[in-house]
Image (cartoon, rainbow, N blue to C red; front, top):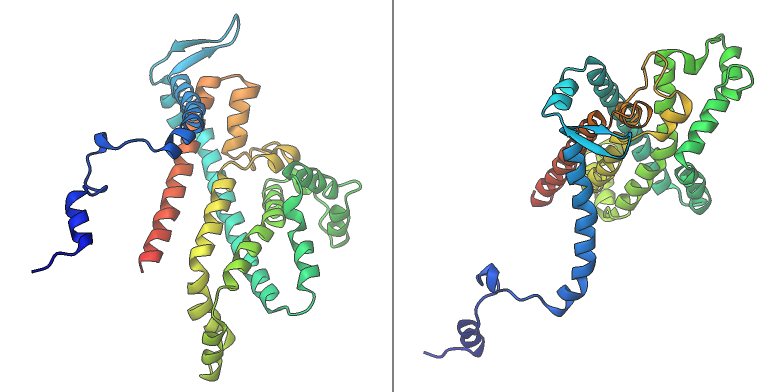
Length: 309
């Protein structure tokens, strides 16, 4: 019975996967990366530890920064704060509205662009243009366009009989900030979806056309399953961004009217920098961090299941 050279080497050299973790040596590449990883870890861990400490403390700023241990007072106050839960409900409504509209519009624009043979190079930059505008500038543009005295959109609405101040009514103000976010970030969904559509095999679609499948059936049963992983990536990026959405609302409505647009980041800003209630703000920040991690883990797990399927 002959034994191959590879089998002899495998029997002599211990397998890396079965080698005890303590016996592993840091490679030269590892030593080169160690300072950067250490610095990154310190910059990440220290703020997190301070945030947790502040959430259990009453922060004093007069006479220097001092933390006075307050136990679970901040946490109990947060879980019993009705106004805070209203802000969470507003955040959820904003999250679902913006993400749903952006997903539908983004996919529709990407499909239209994918079918556009001539002029795509000219149309695509125009569609992507809002994405490159700073959110604060988008907010200022929206505020001036909706101004009841000289705003262009306000004048158009007045011409059809809508005379109320758009940003002065709770429902219309919420709709306005949702549409501003949709205007700015739908191009990102369209761009990512367009990249996914370029990977769909055209011969499969041609075969389906020869079998008499309609355009809707081809999209629903063939195109959409093919681009589902990349759509999940787009949703993941936008959902994590929507949780910490702040700029446009702060510039346009500042959370009003009647707290109709006061989502959690605006509530956090008020607690930290308007009322200097840093312990309570730390609790809100940790809540946002936990929610962001849960959303990220949900979509990453969903993407993993799709890849396995």
